[in-house]
Image (cartoon, rainbow, N blue to C red; front, side, top):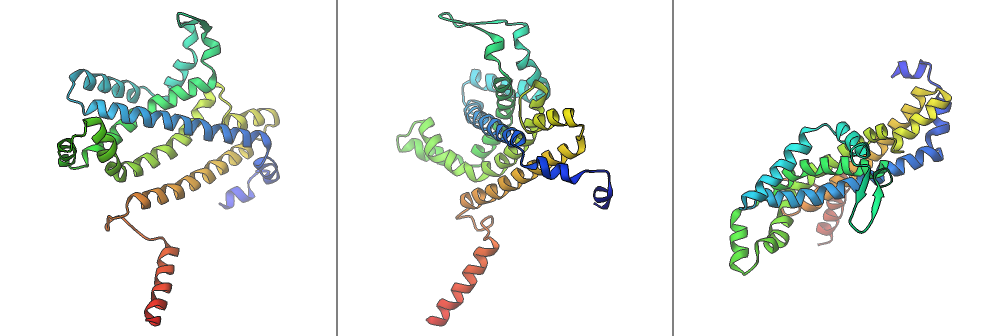
Length: 263
C-alpha cells in the first residue's frame, strides 16, 4: 500500500477522471451489456437445461452440442468471430430484405452474442443442477394433478430450484461484469475501452486503470450486497441457510426484550 502512496501516481488525475462523463458513459455501457447478456444467458440456460433433461434424444444431443461448443471456445475468441463475421458473410439475406453484415454485427451486437451465448452454456448446467435438486416426486405429484410437464416445470420445479440456482447465478453475473471488459477488443465502448482511449491521449496509463478498477470494485460490491438479499429471500423456510443480518438480529433482540418486559 505504501508503494502506491509514494509511487509516481498522480492522484489528482485519478480524482479528475473518476467522475468524468466519458468514463461514466463507459460504465453505463458495461452495466447494459452485462445485464442484456445475462438475460440472454438465463433464457438460453433454462431452455437448454429443460432440453438436456428431456426424454427426447435429439433435444439432449442438441443441448449437449451447444454446451460443448460455447464452453469449449474462449470468450475472447468468440467475440472476435462474431465481430469479424462479415468476412465470410458480407450480406444478410432475409428473403424479403438484405442488409450488410457490418451494419448488423455492430460492436454491441457482437459483444451481446459472444457474452450471452457463452454465459448460456454455463447457466444451462447451473439450472440443470438446480432442477435435479428438487425431488422427482414433485413432478409426479404435479402430473397426477393434471399438469403438463412444462407447466409443472414452470409452477412447481423452477420456483423450488431457485434456492439452489440463485447463488451460482449471482456469481456468474459478477463474473460476467468483469468478463465484459474483453469486449474492448472489438471496439465496444465499455468502461475499460473508454479508459484506454483516454490514456492513449494523455499517457496517464496507471491513473486511468486505477479509475477503472475503482468503478469495477464499486459495482461488484453493490451486486454482492444485492445477491445476498436475493439469496436470503429464497432461503426463507430453510433454517440451515436462512441467516439474519446484523441489523435484523439487533432489532429482533431489542424489540423482543421490550415485548417480554411489557408482558
